Amino acid sequence: MTHPADAAALPQRASAYGTRLASISVLIVDDEPGMRHFIARILGPQCKRLELAASITEAEDWLACAQFDVIVLDNILGAERGLDWLARQRGRGFLPPVVLISAFADLETAIEAMQAGAVDMLLKPFRSNQLLNAVARSAEHMRLENENHVLRHKLRSSAESSLTSDRLTGNSPAIEAIRAAIARVAPLPSSVLLTGASGTGKEVAARMIHDLSPRAQHHFVPVNCAAMSAEMVEAELFGHVEGAFAGATNRREGLFLHAQDGTLFLDEVSGLPLSTQAKLLRVIEDHRVRPVGAEREIPVDLRLIFATNTDLEAEVAAGRFRADLFYRINIVHLHMPPLRERGDDVVALAGSFMERLSRQLGMPALDITPRIEAALRRRDWPGNVRELRNLIERALILGTFPPDLMPPDLTGPDLSGTDD
Image (cartoon, rainbow, N blue to C red; front, side, top):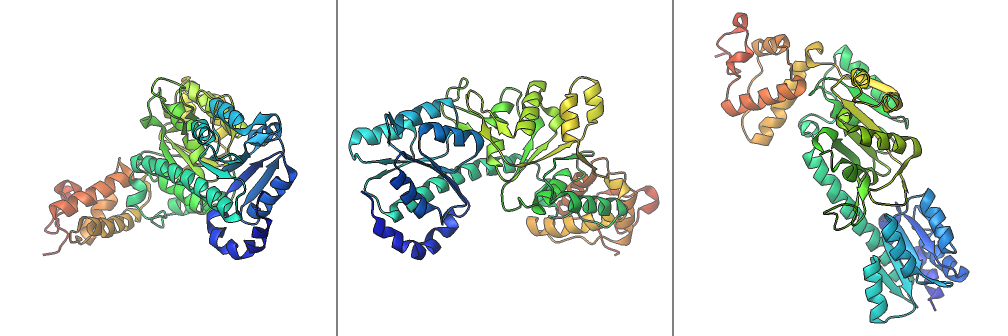
């Protein structure tokens, strides 16, 4: 038996659990209508989404069409046990954290629950706060695991976004046109393809699109496709189940699932193997991912932004990039202008880098004099914004701008950034 009297205290508990549960989706699997509705009455007002399944078949139907953060699973489901179903599902693919409900408090059931992959267990009768705490703990555990994995990828991604402002710096016509295009496309669900030479700010633009989109409160996950080995790229993107390949000692969610409800930024997408390109195309079209070694596909809801510094049409002609994938991702195309075409933006960027890097390095900023500004404007900048950032950092370390910055007709006494 449960404690129906707990329901009277639910309004008072709303503030305690609201922030922890308000963003999660829960699936309740129980064949007893009274228990389903009791649990729904406890969790329903707290969660973003709640669905009910009266049988294992209904539960599998829900898992095939929606993504859940937690499953509340009864152990006795007619002629079947929830633990047996859970063990089978773990073998077929991913499941969200499972809170098992059982009327038996014996050690054998607890060991079976742990082996089957349940993350928590509630014994009947239970109180509403026990259920709320178990669901909140399970969702928080998964959230922390996902965030740790995302942070590892962010640390390995380009440092460009952390060394430039959160917005594109400058007021040149070229960059104003990019800003206007970003403002127009950001609220839409369409995929975006960013092109341009290395260092032109493609990741900064991608982050702007994410930050201005309805998905801004969720993860922005940057991935450098060219940096992943061909052998592991599919496991990294789509995840894998335990035993999927040598060394896969446990299951791992891929980056598509970590970016759920947010934005996945696939940089250097031309570096993906052709076999992975085919699977990526299917994910884009079906909005489902199949982890390596899994039988079941998982629905995903996220925004995709692609970037490359190569000519994709030339890659298609050479047979190194799938034509159908190119046409699928080339819906909205934004070409990032090189720094040499941005006029006075180079001076604004240099000032921004000088301020931020001097603070970061703990070194006094150098003056950017009119002669230095003229030299910055005249430079070709083959490495674009990244090259400029490196030059400013080098100048701060040396205490002077490098001599090779100044063409012969601009050399003078102010190479150090002063007029003395």
